[in-house]
Image (cartoon, rainbow, N blue to C red; front, side):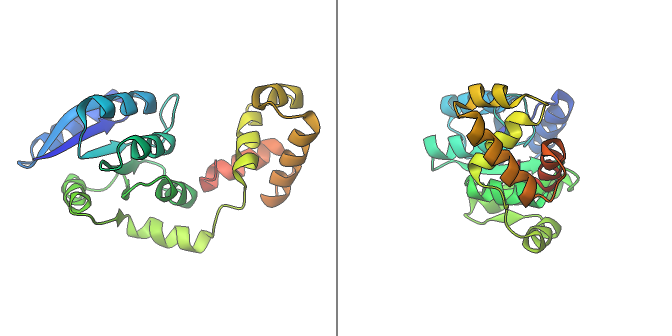
Length: 201
């Protein structure tokens, strides 16, 4: 029996996935979570074989949760199941240790088959997304640039970002300027929007 946890913030989607997977004779849903933080906690408690994670969840997102779960439980495999088929997300998910990256509009039978393949040690990636990720190239932003850009995406002032990240205002300006240049944007709000669209944030 393959023991699976579902982490998805939309209760209706989570319930539907649990019901569909429950029909499979060799898959058992042993836990559910609505946030990335909950997913880590439920994994600690239930020790599943596989955790299915959405990317966009409140608090810790799915990619951060994937990295934390893999750090704590290297024997547990992580699969990303998302609405947002962005090339940058795929790269970040693989860097975080995800064994699979699938979009939610895949048929249920494909999801069950992917779970079995991951259990058997395979890596499973949506083919269209893999091609898009290869053509898009790597994320041009450094981890620090991503952090500063994300912190300022809501319109926070340089001072706010500086205090939040414990950086000098001059350093914050330098990172923002570099991020704006790398994304070919006119300002930091546009830079953040472009980075989100590509899945770089």
